[in-house]
Each structure stands twice: as structure tokens, then as C-alpha cells.
Image (cartoon, rainbow, N blue to C red):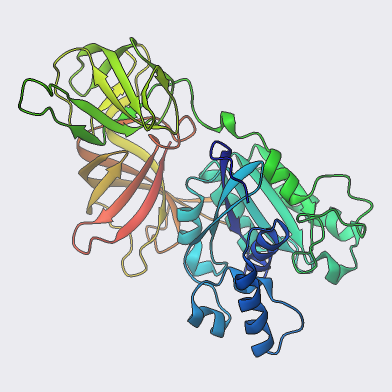
Length: 420
């Protein structure tokens, strides 16, 4: 395992239909990159033998709970951490069942890379399209289509080419920037960490090489300064501790000591006096760093306020045009329904003013006649908030452009949305 604490962190999410081999692929990545301990390996070896399976079932590595392991199912979003000498990784493993689309949205919302698994025997299916649409909606910068179980189609190049063409045809309608295709067998390890001699016709890289080398530094927005205040560090009431700092995570841009900044919503201008990071004072800060900022003037900021640049401001608005993924299994979306909206560090009340259309996942057709928005449906809506929010379009900034809706009665998260 890597002991380089400064190595870059890559977040990736896995998506695919049931039994496409996601758990096996993650197990293979962990095992072949030597990111699991011997006792973990012995444990899954014993579990595989107990279940009467040939060889070691690497899928059991990711089925964390004992009860899940015994039933042979994976549920909810499981986060896994591993590292190689080049990079650190966080995997969001989401289930393949259609009713768990919302879990994919949760796991994918902060990902740099989406791995979409396709069973080589089945090709592009409805769930593949659904996952591609969500990757596109969430604007995950890089998509890797892993065409799995190549061993079950005799590593046939034609099968691989057909699936690649089918996916590319569908993805052409979507906003997917960077797509790679890799033929793999997660079960046998072909092209996962080690290059396979069974696919001499494939001249691309292995999956692990791709994950270690894909350029993700520019995935953040380094242009538009956005600093949502998360916590106010108050001054002590004595003559030696006259300190007030504003703590939070940089959501965009590069903030430097001495910069002229604007405070929202007050509109006051001031300068950045000091920036404090985990190691002490620093000259500048950028995404995704968490820092405490001191300002030059005695203006009062509170949680939910934002520090920006004067000539580069987000939209300050009470009307938000949003693409929503509906999560709630018990209730449908209610036009004129009241909800709690969470945006950056703000929590405010809102009402759904208008339902513009429902998006058909298969055809990308906009259905304006169907007002029934149920779990996993994607819809475009207009929200009105009780006070202004400081938002960018999601395409510009994934942090200031995303919202969560919470039901005021049950306190359940009912939807996630992207500002258009």
C-alpha cells in the first residue's frame, strides 16, 4: 500500500445491471493491486468453500455484511478505500437493481470516473442506458465502459466492437465528454490490473493503468471563486484572542491572501487577511481544500453565506430551474409541495412551482403530459425558495450547482437536483 500521503485522490463509482460483475471487478482490483490483507483473503476463501464455489469468489470482498455474504446479495452504496504507489482511491459501489438508481446518483455525485459494466453476452441493455444518462446528468468527467465476461464470449473482438458501437450511438445524444472502452474478465483478471494475452486485438490500457493515470486535476473549477461558509469560529472575549475566522471547503477558484472579495448576501467588499489550513497559515487555497479564512474588515458572516469575487459572482436567485432525480419510494413529487432545500451550506425552505417535463430514460423523450414522478424518475422542475441562493449551473460547478430536497414531515431525502 502507498504511504504517500500527498498522492492524488480519485473517486470512482461502479454501475451496471444485476450480475454484471461489479463486486467481482472491485474484488479483483483490490486483490490484484495487493490492497487486501492475507486474513481477509483467507476469510473469503473459507466463505467460498462453505458456499461450494470453485476457486475464491472475489465478489465476497465487497459484500461487507455477513448476512449479505451468506445471501449472496449486495445492497446500498458501499464505499471502499484502497491505494497504490501512484494514487489513493475511493470506490462507491452501487447496486444494479433498477430500484436502486437513486443509490447510483448518491455514489456518483462526487466521482471523477464512472465505471459502467456491460455483460458481453447481453450487450447494451436498459440499465446501461439509465446509468449512462445519470453519468451524463451528473457530468462525471470520465466514463469507462468495462465490457465484462469476455471469457464467456471467447474474447471475440466482433462482440466487443458491436457493444462499443451500440454504446457510442446512444452516448452521442448525451453530454458525455470522455469515454473509454476496455474488454475485461473480472473473474479471471483479464485487462483489470494485468494485461491479457487473450485480447491481442485490443491496444488500449488496462483498467488499473487508466485509473492511475487519467488526468483529474482539471476536474475542479479553478476559475470561479466560491467559498460557502460552513462554520464561524468566534472571537474569544479577552484581549489576547481577538480572532474570527470562517471555516469551509473551497467550492471553486483559487483564493489568495490579499485578494479583494465580495461577501454574499450582504454585498460588502473586503480583503482576505489570512488563510489557515491543516498545516497552519498558507498563502492560497483551492478546491477541494478545507480552510479557515480571516477577512480584513469587521463584517459578520454566518453559515450559508458565500465569499466570491466582485466581478465573478454566482447567480443570486429565488427561482431555480433544476433537473431532479426523485428518490422517494413512498411519495410522488407534489407540485406546490413544500420541501427543505439543501444547497452548499444553506438549508432553506422551498416550493415546487412547476413541473416542466418528465424525461424518458430510454428514448430521452420529454414527456410533458405525465405529472406522475415516482422513485428513480428524472424530471425538470422550477423551485421557488424562501430566500436567495447563490447558485451556478451544474455544468460550471458541481458543488454550487447541486441541491438536495428533504421532506419536511418525514425528514427523508426525496430528491437530488442539478441546476440547469
